[in-house]
Length: 220
Image (tube, rainbow, N blue to C red; front, side, top):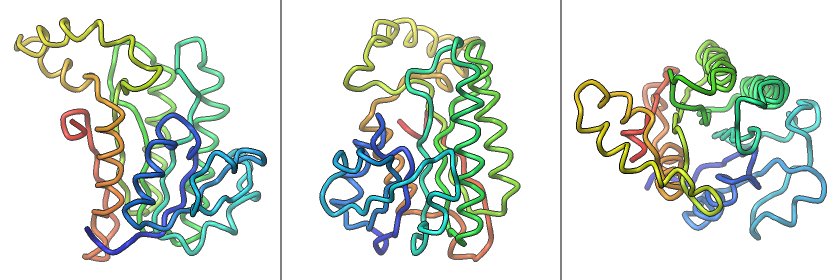
């Protein structure tokens, strides 16, 4: 493992964050987690809680330092086509502000949780995440973009009934690429991927900004 990173994380008490933070902490990384007042009790011991609002950059931007890595996990829970307005008001706004705060704080590596695309459904969700990806890529930040489709885990297991369909589609040449790109991943695979991204920042050794995209096949 590389030397411990100083990590600033948003969305740390959400579905992915509450599984990721304990793993990063156990591996020796120093973590500052942005949480709303009252949610700091949800963080493991040893994690520094930063009280603020991801939709208000002024509430936390001056406390991103001395972090070198920024992980942005904020997003509307249980996305559905009916939540298009929330995607723009929460997912988009929080990501744009996080990127701005990271640039202002001279962050070395930004890890962004996006979504697999293109896809025949969830167009508003994908559109917002793509817009945020574009803004991040133009920011000059050294970047890792992680693109899962659906993450299986506690309370998020219903798509397992679709696994036989995925297996068939992955065998057929006409549907293989789409089935792999929009395949299901597990919470453990996501935590492993995000941890690997933190510990293997892209391009830092060369001193040049670069963008790395991890799709479902890489997450698996």
